[in-house]
Length: 415
Length: 93
Image 1 (spheres, chains in turn red, brown):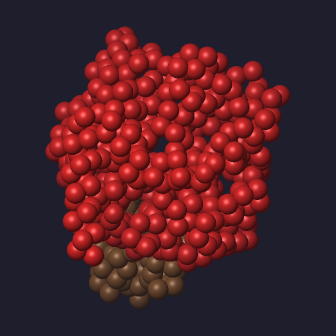
Image 2 (cartoon, one colour):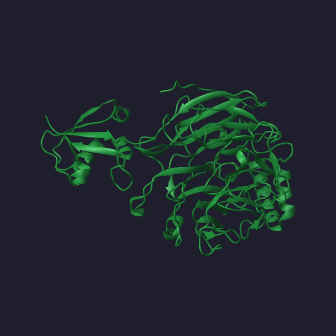
Image 3 (spheres, one colour):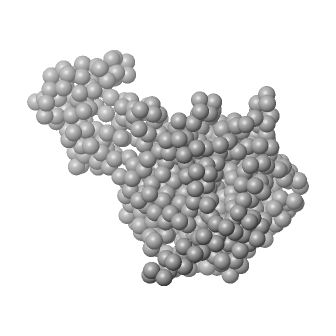
């Protein structure tokens, strides 16, 4: 067994969470993000498909999903960056007996929206959404999705029947977008009571009807808090944008070597800036032409540019899976991704140049980044400015923002 | 003497460090023996069976030298003084 090392992090440090097929790592750097200390591995030998860092309400809690071929999947946590961890005696994320389902894996751990600071979500395989409203102590499945009439027709993709994307709306607490492979994107507007398929315009290359109501193999959706109506989607064939919260999708695959890919990350401060790594075909699933290129759009998908400085441009047959890319919230923003071949790359200048942070790891399946003590705000998009932008573009948002602002004022008054 | 379980070291952590666990009663089947085991060490349950009570795919349970997978599953009879082995299967990658 490898020797386990630990890191500790202080305010303004950046941590990088790396889930691999043989355990989890926690890396730390200062704001420069040039040198990284390595902590881990944790859950040695276990695939870790999902990680998250919760620093709401004064917490510094690391979450990860430990999957074991033998002992099942359990949600673990640590309040000291992995030095000591909690693996609950009784598994906290599990299906009720009457569902006739059994948990295979946890693919996503997400934090609740701004008005729910103790809420966490897990997206799991077989496709289901679990929620906790007590900061991760107790969990329950969202029954309306278990009972969804489409469920019998959702079918597993190559990775399994997974719910992998969870996007609580940052403004409307009753709205949330989720996505699964295969099945597609679904949205609730009534706090999870009902879910509607939101796949209009997204193609399903592998079905006789190329544009069905549902059944698409969505790989990842991203959203910026300043512009929650606008979403970007990396599909199993297809790259899309929605300007109406997912009601309809527009093809934006112009200037990319392939519209196939898995990962997608949004710039923390620029709602129109998105990063992807195109992959050649669903049969081959490696970077085209042996070149490892991150593609970036800065105009919401009207055009894309390759970012290559510091990335191998020869014999690089790499695969980057759906959750293996992330951004931090620094300014300038850091962008990170990990490969199936066990390398982790990072950029501390928003993609202009890249460095190899780690290599020789087991296959990387999850990357997450966090600024310690930081929020998603920066000098470019601080809270009010973000909301104003959203409100200007969408009158309905303006109404909600006004409500939220008055609530915040009232709350501040009470304090 | 009585019926007892022998569990792998990974699971012993969840059973007060014990790798050999004698059961207080006289279970007639593997299912009953497991219920007795959960009573004594609740943390073992989720690691050995899934939410539907099925033994996890990559875990084998033996009554003596007989794998219950090739006998009567959880209904396999447990003789007096039998030792039940819980063993991780050859799996992984």
